[in-house]
Image (cartoon, rainbow, N blue to C red; front, side, top):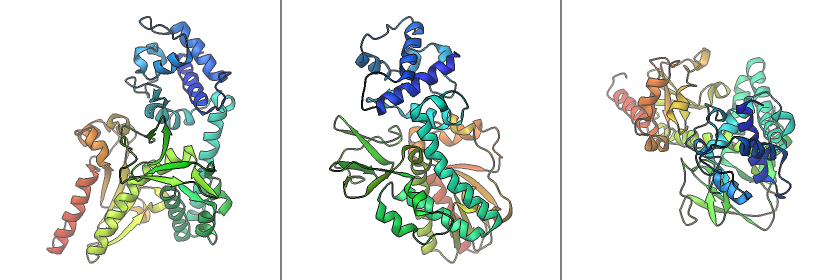
Length: 381
């Protein structure tokens, strides 16, 4: 077995163990991962004698106990597989962004892996059908439906079956049942928690934790952005794969969109149109000013600037998606962690056109206001 496969087996095995209500016998992948690690663990570390000790070890940086050739280049070796007894943010990112795109035995062997793939495919099938309608049938209608679906799942990570029925009973291209399949039932007679900044929270040992605690980590129950969701008949929540790939990155996108909508209301004679997810999400937001200039914006909320930089390309700009200026807008919470974030991305993004700007959310909004101010003075920017 290749070393990177051993890492993958261990990571998926840990994920299955955490999801299992029965903690013994151990999931097959975890058993294999533990056996492999016991034979090759770093010589400076003793293999734990108990499961509690093993789980505690997994909270340490992987560089401290895993052989160097085990650790994939995509996984930050300064972080562990677990954090506060739960799957770590780095492990979650690696699972969703790297493992789900790989071909191999895990797809057929791991029930967790299968379910995540199935859940993601449900959203992808909706997207593909709407893209087909966009190119072959009614582009405006397909665009309208896509925005409605995407906004709903981002803004309603907890919902009821009745909410879904009311919202989608007269919609084309997508059925109520398909939207319902993006959600899972909540348990009765228990409370759930939600953060306005990062979405669904999990509770463990009296502490609330979000999907990416290094970006949004303070979830004390008395904070005004943390809310209790009381159980009620028909309550459902968005499935894990959709939450990570659609909901979490979508929340700051919609926050920026709302801020720009407010500017449009206040300055409609200069900022004439704002389009959300144009071309079925070719990029996130398109701005049209009264001097006929068009700005294209793609929002990014990725903690590590080096990881983001590797994937950045120029924004698509054909047809009605053409633009005069393009921007990658970085969430302020990422910039707070890395003050040099935008500078690092500009230097490291080798495939990014020089004319595409990389700016913080706050700075971008200031640029929009500056553009409006120039138009008010009769000039151009």
